[in-house]
Image 1 (cartoon, helix red, strand yellow):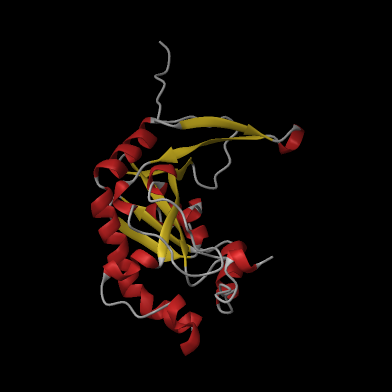
Image 2: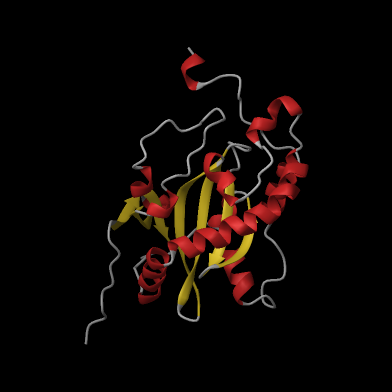
Length: 227
């Protein structure tokens, strides 16, 4: 009896590199209409694109975990279906969590008054529509109750380099941080089995230290003024 083959629309096996540096990944795109109104308006890399970009959000299976021969599993398909069917609920959960975390982020970045437009005060979750834009989604190999963890990576006005990342399970927010929070497998594993994952990798600690002195967007030089 052959193993059943699972597929996710618009996701294909990508092979890159040669020899010892050869690796494969499962990459594609996903359409998430719930994010169509979210587009950054400030910063050096502010997006001036069509409103159809929500149809081409990057989708990667497995996060940062390297697998020699990656395949799409039943759990991946379950996660993909859950994402599409519950995208509005997931979005609201993430935005509500970000709304609570946002004042702490403002203190951390500590923008001057003349830079306040990059990280303005927000009155509701709707205020984030001009401040963040969903760029990538990661469906992990780590699952709980048959549903995999899913990470969301965003561009944001207040940090062009590190961005914003949110790890979720179903419609529950696991962690909010820089964009790497969206694709680090150990974060999902720690939530799944907190007693077996006791310490953060060195890379995460370095990133946290860097965030104390973030690289701020260059609001004074729009892309059309670089030449």
